[in-house]
Image (cartoon, rainbow, N blue to C red; front, side, top):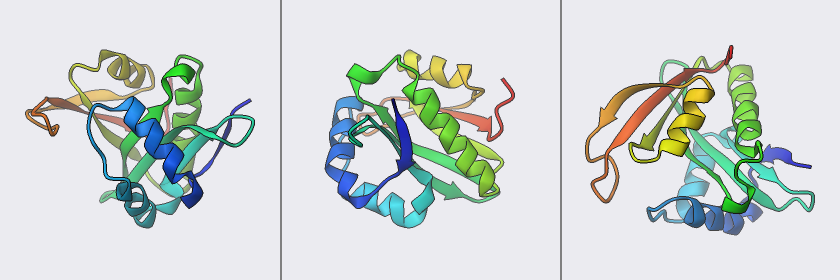
Length: 150
């Protein structure tokens, strides 16, 4: 059974571990507390039965009642079990309750699995971002309404 809850400072080491196993870029651990100061309720974790984080969404606020998912990761051994969808749905509900109307995110052009997941969950690819990532890789901006009618 999976529980979705807000990120706690005590989750930092575990969230950092998930990040290092989920992304091919380096992130300073302080970025998570920075995002938390920007939007405390926009940081959600999925936990196993022992309350150990196995996935997370980290988001920030944008102008125009838009939310931006900055990081979204699930431990590899928990992927393809519906946990990402549960996290995204919980995040959408949170964003809707706080008055947001759309969600923006960026994903690598080469990450077809993530692109397919987001498209399946109502996101549309809107822009190609040349050289967006630290290693010069290209990104794609994706946008979706907070309320997913799919």
